[in-house]
Amino acid sequence: MDKETKETKETKETKELKENKDSKEIKSEHKRRIVIPGEVVATGANYLPGEGTRREGNDILASRLGVLEMEDRFVKVVAISGIYIPRRGNVVLGIVEDITFNGWIMGINSPDRAFLPIMECRGFISKRDDLSLIYNYGDIVVMKVIGVKSRGVDLTTKDRGLDKLEDGLVITINANKVPRVIGKLGSMVNMIKELTKCDVVVGQNGVIWIKGSNIESELVAREAIDFISDNSLVEGLTDKVKEFLEKKMKEKK
Image 1: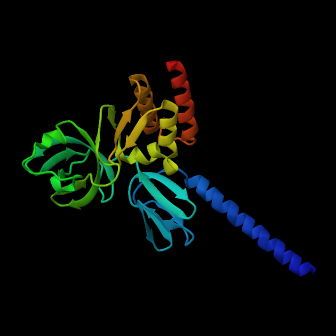
Image 2 (image 1 turned 45 degrees about the vertical axis):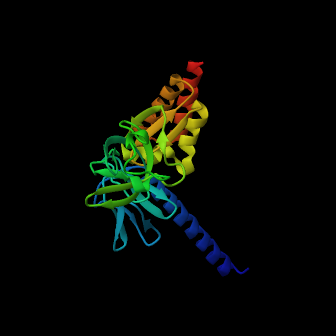
Image 3 (image 1 turned 135 degrees about the horizontal axis):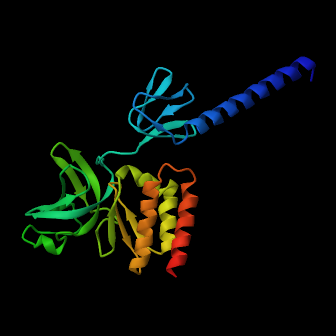
């Protein structure tokens, strides 16, 4: 290899190392910081706009107040406040608020009217049947959003795993904190289940059901979820929650 070729190769490698370093520094600088609508959160064609962002020319701008997150090339802004906005396909936990002749009016932690019609329940149900024997006032039901219209939200319990939840503890958090409670690929909520030995069902509307063999374990799971909600912007949250849970479960014994 001649001297010129060697220098060219070294220059190219140095340039690539610098670009990688700059990219890492950019990601480190932007990682989990609060941004406001209209703020430039990334620049360049290498980045792709995700949820809560939009592209204008060569820049990616935040379209809402929230926490900036960068995963590989994708840039997104996770909202830190606001009401739950139902979306088709969301799995939610709802409370029976009223019973009509053809279904149930459900509270789903949203200002929108939510309705579960008879035809969207499993099995055959007649309008002449006493619907309170299926879902009664105050019952907690896991449902899926199948439609969002101006008149309200349509729900179903026909899919697998959707039905009434018996007993247990029900809590409500800000729906925007749900992704942190669930964690990547369910890592956070699975850790809570494993360490507390509780069943935990997290609705995308921020309503969460906890069922353990005793009330003490349920309360520890609740404290862990509250801890996550209160510290959702903290780095290394998974390790902190694990330490928190291990300490609480040790004290319980």
